[in-house]
Image (cartoon, rainbow, N blue to C red):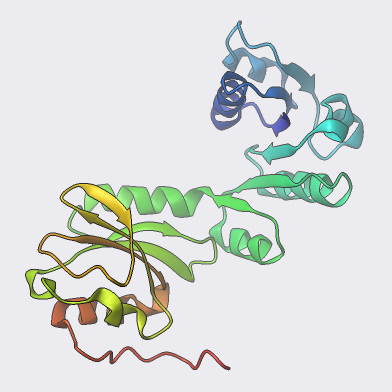
Length: 229
Protein backbone atom coordinates (compact mmCIF):
# COMPACT_ATOMS: atom_id res chain seq x y z
CA UNK A 1 0.00 0.00 0.00
CA UNK A 2 0.98 3.66 -0.25
CA UNK A 3 1.74 5.48 3.02
CA UNK A 4 2.29 9.17 3.66
CA UNK A 5 4.58 10.05 6.57
CA UNK A 6 4.55 13.65 7.78
CA UNK A 7 7.73 14.60 9.65
CA UNK A 8 11.22 13.37 8.84
CA UNK A 9 12.69 13.47 12.33
CA UNK A 10 14.11 10.43 14.07
CA UNK A 11 10.72 8.71 14.27
CA UNK A 12 9.49 9.66 10.81
CA UNK A 13 12.70 8.71 9.01
CA UNK A 14 12.90 5.34 10.75
CA UNK A 15 9.23 4.73 10.04
CA UNK A 16 9.66 5.59 6.35
CA UNK A 17 12.62 3.22 5.99
CA UNK A 18 10.82 0.43 7.83
CA UNK A 19 7.70 0.77 5.69
CA UNK A 20 9.72 0.65 2.47
CA UNK A 21 11.63 -2.40 3.73
CA UNK A 22 8.25 -4.11 4.18
CA UNK A 23 7.40 -3.50 0.54
CA UNK A 24 5.17 -0.42 0.81
CA UNK A 25 5.51 2.74 -1.26
CA UNK A 26 6.19 5.78 0.91
CA UNK A 27 6.15 9.55 0.58
CA UNK A 28 7.52 11.73 3.34
CA UNK A 29 6.77 15.41 3.97
CA UNK A 30 8.88 17.79 6.02
CA UNK A 31 9.12 21.57 6.14
CA UNK A 32 12.92 21.40 6.23
CA UNK A 33 14.70 19.81 3.26
CA UNK A 34 17.75 19.13 5.43
CA UNK A 35 15.69 16.64 7.43
CA UNK A 36 15.77 14.24 4.49
CA UNK A 37 19.47 13.66 5.19
CA UNK A 38 18.28 11.23 7.87
CA UNK A 39 17.11 8.91 5.10
CA UNK A 40 19.65 6.49 3.60
CA UNK A 41 20.79 7.01 0.02
CA UNK A 42 19.10 3.74 -0.92
CA UNK A 43 15.66 5.01 0.13
CA UNK A 44 13.55 5.42 -3.01
CA UNK A 45 10.36 7.07 -1.75
CA UNK A 46 9.10 10.56 -2.54
CA UNK A 47 10.39 13.55 -0.54
CA UNK A 48 8.20 16.64 -0.37
CA UNK A 49 9.24 19.89 1.26
CA UNK A 50 6.10 21.28 2.83
CA UNK A 51 3.46 20.84 5.51
CA UNK A 52 1.17 17.94 6.30
CA UNK A 53 -1.83 20.22 6.70
CA UNK A 54 -1.37 21.76 3.22
CA UNK A 55 -3.57 19.93 0.73
CA UNK A 56 -1.29 20.71 -2.22
CA UNK A 57 1.63 19.12 -0.39
CA UNK A 58 -0.47 16.14 0.67
CA UNK A 59 -1.63 15.57 -2.89
CA UNK A 60 1.93 15.85 -4.15
CA UNK A 61 2.73 13.06 -1.69
CA UNK A 62 -0.01 10.91 -3.19
CA UNK A 63 -2.62 11.24 -0.48
CA UNK A 64 -5.44 10.47 -2.94
CA UNK A 65 -4.06 6.97 -3.46
CA UNK A 66 -2.79 6.41 0.08
CA UNK A 67 -4.12 3.79 2.47
CA UNK A 68 -2.42 5.19 5.57
CA UNK A 69 -0.91 8.36 7.03
CA UNK A 70 1.32 8.93 10.04
CA UNK A 71 1.71 12.46 11.42
CA UNK A 72 4.89 12.38 13.51
CA UNK A 73 6.26 15.93 13.53
CA UNK A 74 7.36 17.60 16.76
CA UNK A 75 4.16 19.68 16.97
CA UNK A 76 0.96 18.32 18.51
CA UNK A 77 -1.29 20.84 16.74
CA UNK A 78 0.25 20.14 13.34
CA UNK A 79 -0.08 16.39 13.82
CA UNK A 80 -3.71 16.56 14.86
CA UNK A 81 -4.64 18.95 12.05
CA UNK A 82 -2.88 16.72 9.52
CA UNK A 83 -4.61 13.61 10.89
CA UNK A 84 -8.02 15.26 10.75
CA UNK A 85 -7.54 16.42 7.15
CA UNK A 86 -6.42 12.94 6.13
CA UNK A 87 -9.39 11.32 7.85
CA UNK A 88 -12.14 13.84 7.07
CA UNK A 89 -11.15 15.19 3.66
CA UNK A 90 -9.43 12.21 2.06
CA UNK A 91 -11.12 9.33 3.94
CA UNK A 92 -7.78 7.65 4.71
CA UNK A 93 -8.70 4.48 6.64
CA UNK A 94 -5.55 4.21 8.77
CA UNK A 95 -4.39 7.45 10.39
CA UNK A 96 -2.24 7.97 13.49
CA UNK A 97 -0.94 11.14 15.15
CA UNK A 98 2.03 11.45 17.48
CA UNK A 99 1.10 13.53 20.55
CA UNK A 100 3.39 14.74 23.32
CA UNK A 101 0.69 15.99 25.71
CA UNK A 102 -1.11 12.91 27.16
CA UNK A 103 -4.14 15.02 28.12
CA UNK A 104 -4.59 16.05 24.50
CA UNK A 105 -4.04 12.48 23.38
CA UNK A 106 -6.95 11.30 25.54
CA UNK A 107 -9.26 13.95 24.09
CA UNK A 108 -8.40 13.17 20.48
CA UNK A 109 -8.64 9.45 21.10
CA UNK A 110 -12.24 9.95 22.24
CA UNK A 111 -12.88 11.87 19.02
CA UNK A 112 -11.80 8.84 17.04
CA UNK A 113 -8.30 9.99 16.07
CA UNK A 114 -5.78 7.26 16.95
CA UNK A 115 -2.82 8.77 18.79
CA UNK A 116 0.53 7.71 20.19
CA UNK A 117 1.12 9.61 23.43
CA UNK A 118 4.91 9.87 23.51
CA UNK A 119 5.20 11.20 27.07
CA UNK A 120 2.91 8.55 28.55
CA UNK A 121 4.74 5.72 26.80
CA UNK A 122 8.20 7.05 27.71
CA UNK A 123 7.27 7.61 31.36
CA UNK A 124 5.97 4.07 31.66
CA UNK A 125 9.10 2.61 30.07
CA UNK A 126 11.42 4.63 32.35
CA UNK A 127 9.47 3.64 35.47
CA UNK A 128 9.66 -0.02 34.56
CA UNK A 129 13.45 0.22 34.30
CA UNK A 130 13.92 2.33 37.42
CA UNK A 131 11.62 0.12 39.48
CA UNK A 132 11.89 -3.42 38.13
CA UNK A 133 9.77 -4.76 41.02
CA UNK A 134 6.88 -2.52 40.00
CA UNK A 135 3.87 -4.66 38.98
CA UNK A 136 4.00 -4.97 35.22
CA UNK A 137 1.80 -2.67 33.17
CA UNK A 138 2.20 -3.70 29.56
CA UNK A 139 -0.10 -1.19 27.93
CA UNK A 140 -2.31 1.78 28.88
CA UNK A 141 -4.80 3.37 26.51
CA UNK A 142 -4.24 7.12 25.89
CA UNK A 143 -7.01 8.12 28.30
CA UNK A 144 -5.34 6.13 31.09
CA UNK A 145 -8.60 4.33 31.89
CA UNK A 146 -7.85 0.84 30.58
CA UNK A 147 -4.65 -1.18 30.85
CA UNK A 148 -3.12 -4.57 30.18
CA UNK A 149 -1.16 -5.87 33.16
CA UNK A 150 1.15 -8.80 33.78
CA UNK A 151 0.88 -10.67 37.07
CA UNK A 152 2.90 -13.65 38.33
CA UNK A 153 0.50 -15.86 40.24
CA UNK A 154 1.44 -16.99 43.77
CA UNK A 155 1.55 -20.67 44.67
CA UNK A 156 -1.82 -20.49 46.50
CA UNK A 157 -3.48 -20.54 43.05
CA UNK A 158 -2.07 -23.97 42.17
CA UNK A 159 -4.92 -26.31 41.23
CA UNK A 160 -7.54 -23.54 41.40
CA UNK A 161 -9.55 -21.91 38.67
CA UNK A 162 -8.65 -18.41 37.53
CA UNK A 163 -12.28 -17.88 36.55
CA UNK A 164 -12.96 -16.00 39.77
CA UNK A 165 -10.90 -13.12 38.38
CA UNK A 166 -13.44 -12.73 35.56
CA UNK A 167 -16.64 -13.11 37.58
CA UNK A 168 -16.74 -9.36 38.21
CA UNK A 169 -17.17 -8.74 34.44
CA UNK A 170 -14.62 -5.90 34.57
CA UNK A 171 -11.39 -7.82 34.14
CA UNK A 172 -10.55 -10.24 31.37
CA UNK A 173 -7.67 -12.72 31.27
CA UNK A 174 -6.12 -12.39 27.82
CA UNK A 175 -3.35 -14.97 28.02
CA UNK A 176 -1.38 -17.26 30.31
CA UNK A 177 2.33 -18.09 30.14
CA UNK A 178 3.38 -21.38 31.72
CA UNK A 179 6.97 -22.62 31.74
CA UNK A 180 7.80 -19.93 29.20
CA UNK A 181 5.08 -21.04 26.78
CA UNK A 182 2.31 -18.49 26.09
CA UNK A 183 -1.25 -19.57 25.36
CA UNK A 184 -4.66 -17.98 25.10
CA UNK A 185 -6.60 -18.30 28.33
CA UNK A 186 -9.56 -20.67 28.50
CA UNK A 187 -11.79 -21.28 31.55
CA UNK A 188 -10.70 -24.94 31.65
CA UNK A 189 -7.16 -23.96 32.68
CA UNK A 190 -6.33 -24.26 36.38
CA UNK A 191 -3.43 -22.63 38.15
CA UNK A 192 0.11 -23.88 38.43
CA UNK A 193 2.91 -22.31 40.42
CA UNK A 194 4.79 -19.73 38.36
CA UNK A 195 1.94 -18.99 35.96
CA UNK A 196 2.00 -15.49 34.46
CA UNK A 197 -1.34 -13.93 33.55
CA UNK A 198 -2.00 -10.98 31.26
CA UNK A 199 -5.19 -9.25 32.36
CA UNK A 200 -7.14 -6.42 30.72
CA UNK A 201 -8.73 -4.21 33.38
CA UNK A 202 -9.81 -0.62 34.08
CA UNK A 203 -6.93 1.16 35.82
CA UNK A 204 -9.08 2.12 38.81
CA UNK A 205 -9.53 -1.56 39.72
CA UNK A 206 -5.85 -2.52 39.83
CA UNK A 207 -5.69 -2.47 43.64
CA UNK A 208 -8.70 -4.79 43.86
CA UNK A 209 -7.14 -7.15 41.32
CA UNK A 210 -3.88 -7.35 43.29
CA UNK A 211 -5.84 -7.94 46.50
CA UNK A 212 -7.74 -10.82 44.90
CA UNK A 213 -4.55 -12.36 43.53
CA UNK A 214 -2.86 -12.25 46.93
CA UNK A 215 -5.88 -13.69 48.77
CA UNK A 216 -7.12 -16.21 46.17
CA UNK A 217 -10.82 -15.82 47.05
CA UNK A 218 -13.32 -18.57 46.32
CA UNK A 219 -16.02 -16.00 45.66
CA UNK A 220 -15.18 -12.63 44.17
CA UNK A 221 -15.43 -9.54 46.32
CA UNK A 222 -14.48 -7.34 43.40
CA UNK A 223 -17.23 -4.74 43.21
CA UNK A 224 -17.84 -2.48 40.26
CA UNK A 225 -20.78 -0.64 38.77
CA UNK A 226 -23.54 -2.73 37.26
CA UNK A 227 -22.94 -3.63 33.62
CA UNK A 228 -26.59 -2.80 32.95
CA UNK A 229 -26.12 0.85 33.89
